[in-house]
Amino acid sequence: MSLLRITPSIHSSVSSRLWRLSVFLLLSLPDSKGKAIWTAHLNITFQVGNQSISELGESGVFGNHSPLERVSGVVVLPEGWNQNACNPMTNFSRPERADSWLALIEGGGCTFTHKINVAAEKGANGVIIYNYPGTGNRVFPMSHQGTENIVAVMIGNLKGMELLHLIQKGVCVTIIIEVGRMHMPWLSHYVISLFTFAAATVAYLFLYCAWRPRVPNSSTRRRRQIKADVKKAIGQLQLQVLKEGDKELDPDENSCVVCFDIYKPQDVVCILACKHFFHKACVDPWLLAHRTCPICKCHILKT
Ligand SMILES: [Zn+2]
Ligand SMILES: [Zn+2]
Image 1 (tube, rainbow, N blue to C red):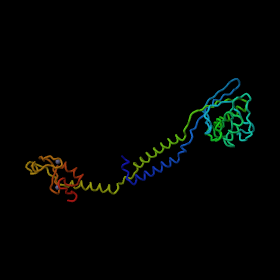
Image 2: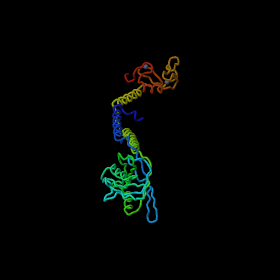
Image 3: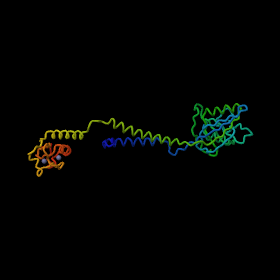
Image 4: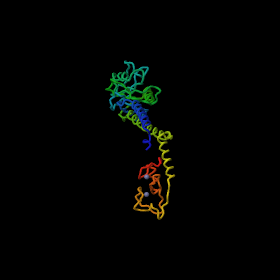
């Protein structure tokens, strides 16, 4: 396995880099206590001529401090020359017959808490705030501490402007706000970070294994040199092909101590400097591994 080939010093440097990377990723995570985001379904109904038009979309998000409740009512605009309801005296052009109404307020100019409180004091049952101009239909969960008793959702600027223009033209718009789905942005961020970290680790190890220096270190070079010397010494050893009448064939006197077999005519034996002899096929691998005579331990490189 590639990992096992990493030398201890390099291995510790890889570990320390990976450790630093994981700490960086953990620190870059958003607050893990971050709240879940709840989307809001807006069921919008309005009259065009004799026709009643309805549209439903997951087009808003609940504020961080909003109750997660269904609320409905006629949509009402702030009175005056702007729509941001930052003036505490702001009135809302509420239709007399409407039991329940929702304030539609433009974002910006003051805090969300301030806008929501202004609408709540005038009796709104819910507040819809549309995002700042130039933000398209992007939304974010508003922070509005201290207004926990009234439903507050944010919708995109484009959707808000669309509703604003309809109401300004005298169209009666009714909205039912319903609780949508929960999103855990920090969780998906965590999962993405974890995948990024795993991918970075695998890529780092892969690249390290692919590109690590191929030059052998000094101990590897020494081992290779010894192996070459042993092979050379083995090649220089005296060989003999046994034939009938040779004293080496006496089974009471001689047998190969590597394979414990007696010698037979035509066997090729290898005679070491110490005069001990063995089957060549038996002693060659032994010498490569041990470099000494199997009987007297005499070293083949020292004789
Ligand atoms: Zn043998
Ligand atoms: Zn020997």
